[in-house]
Image (cartoon, rainbow, N blue to C red; front, top):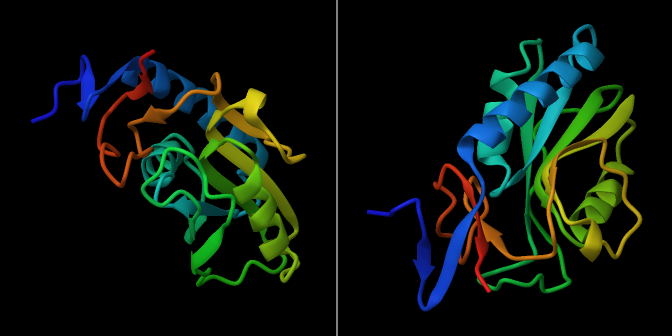
Length: 182
């Protein structure tokens, strides 16, 4: 059983950074923005697996519009805390996004590498529009020029887990977001 006050991963201590209540409040705000922009457009929300699944699911509950969902699965971290710098596509889209309004949904934008990779993938299609929603963004660690249209929270350049974000594929199921304590 996991206690949600402090999380220990080996000898590393993680403490709460963003609570479930804060996440819920921000989801409502983002849902209102997305509803206003897309209520007549039948968008397709494309989650980036595995990290975005909780954010995407809860975000769509706050966005009561007709929409479709699909997923890309990428890998760039493996079991490490730092990106390898290489992105691999592990799952392609099933849906046809040509002429569609696309909302890419990410768990976290760190360096911007994954978003840059996705933008290149989307060059194979002709979507009507593409926007990006990310639960978290680390402006201090951006290495690529990317535009994030919907940001849940800006955070410092620190390692975080919970609410879909993992450490070696664990801790995604935590309801809040935790930061590695110094």
